[in-house]
Length: 197
Image (cartoon, rainbow, N blue to C red; front, side, top):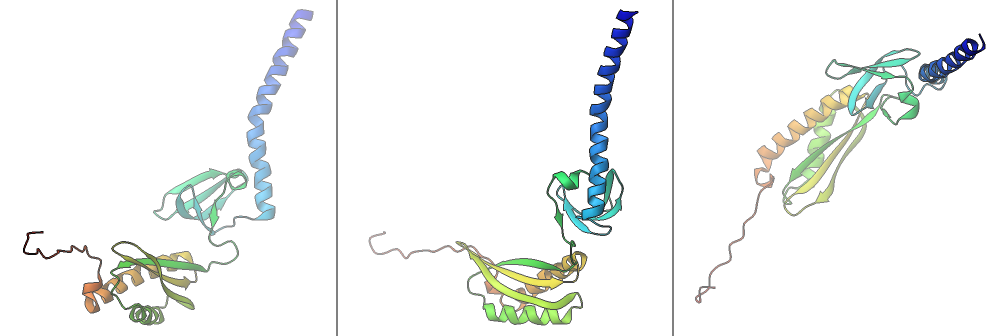
């Protein structure tokens, strides 16, 4: 009986350890759920970039979070993911966001004309919130000049649409008014002198 009792106690002890390890993950998720509820690093309808995907928080439970990705897929993550790993919350305190458009042109383009065109385009578009309107040359390379258009919007969805609109309209403006300023490859031919050199 002693041997049977010792075997049972050993089995129960090992079983308890296994159950403890299995429950540790669930308990961790549950505690993370409480922490999320109190500290609120994420809320319903927050826009997140998580695991390289852009989406909106659709559901928050005690053990998992459902993120509705832009292409209508659902990303289901354990709640403790938002405690242990970094993620971007674009709407933590406000939905306002800056949109950026990069344009690559030749050095000959008149920057001031582009600034005026950007201002006109933004004023005509209801997606712009009227706060940020900046056009700057942010880089020079061997053959191109990098121009950054920066604008503000009320939320990330509108920022995406406004960025697409500005990109298309600025390229149309450049093609129509300064076609010679589109990026090009230069080849320089040196004249040959009488000696053939």
